[in-house]
Amino acid sequence: MMGWTLILLVSAAVLLLILSFFKEKRSVAEREIEQFSISMMEEVQQLQRQIRTIELDSEILAQEVGLQSKSNDQRILLREILDLYKRGYSIEGIALETKQTENEIKLLLTPYMVTKSEGRQVANDS
Image (cartoon, rainbow, N blue to C red; front, side, top):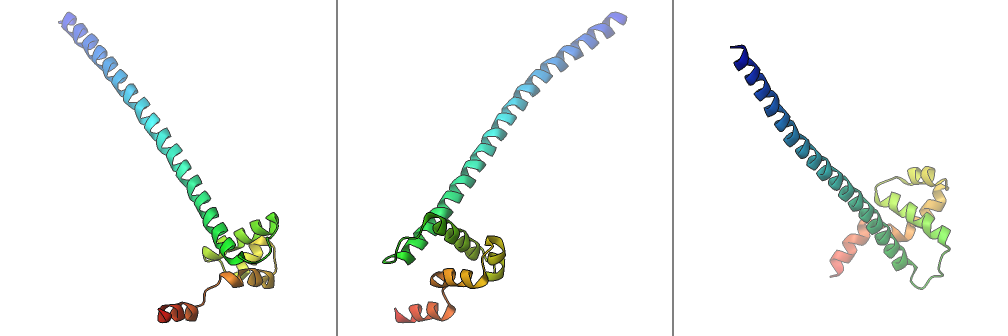
């Protein structure tokens, strides 16, 4: 009887050892998949930021056609202001974020603001 109990306990220990190896291999694979997923999400976020910057730059360039080129600092400020405006910030909020006056913000955003009447007018013209 004692012999059978010992054999049963050793068998259970070997079985548990084998199961732990399989679980460890699966756990390593899951960690690798998770790391890959995280790196892909970071790359997607970086690409989204780059696309957003390109979109804002193209809109700025479209408004500047025929105008003097602005300095790099002015372009960066305008990009930040336009980004905040497109994300729904108020003029006051943009002024606080960029440490500019509300009048400067309004002046810089004026070419990019589309009023509802302009949108209707364009729709009615076609």
